[in-house]
Amino acid sequence: MAIVSFTFLLILGLLVLGYLLHLIYLDKIYNKLLSLSGESSQLGILSQSGASISKEILLKELYTPQGSNFNALAISAWSLFFIALAYFYFLTPSVFENYNYFKLAPLASSLLGFFVFGFLILLLTVVLSVGFSRIYGFYEISTGMKTAIMLTFVLLAVSIICSTYIGTIYPGRTYILPETAAFATLLTSQLILLAPIYIGTAKVMR
Image (cartoon, rainbow, N blue to C red; front, side, top):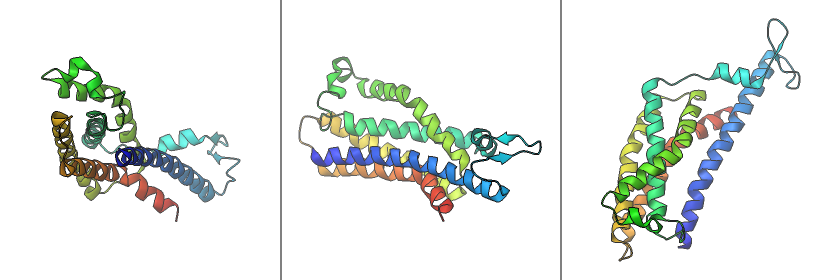
């Protein structure tokens, strides 16, 4: 249980770190533009009319949509990630003894319980999924990276299948292989989805 709790904190920590690095990335970009403009960071960038341009307006101008197809792909990938996350940690009471799938008796006893549970998680995390996908608009994402993000669908599907199996046999005997596979594919997918932020921040920190 201690190991499972640690893995949950690791997943959560990587999400928080990704968001914090994104904020650092935006600050670095803004300050570099200030430096290139020859203006003090405290005075702000000046437009041709002499009016200062706020950071929010500047970042809005820097935002470049990755395209509707990729946006749909990114939202779907993040949605699937949160579903896989919930399946791995909430289908058994390993971490959250008082808050898990089996506490919802109508779902646990239903033939469509797993599906409904996943759908509820989708509804609860849709804002987060859209938010993380919009972040990509501030980064240069190569074709290879987009392909890697697409491959997370396969990894997350494996994680969900393994977690579903673990939830199905609970409270019977658990097996190390499906648990390891579920976590490994979940973590790998998360690192891929956050990779543009990590790589982009590393570049601007140089």
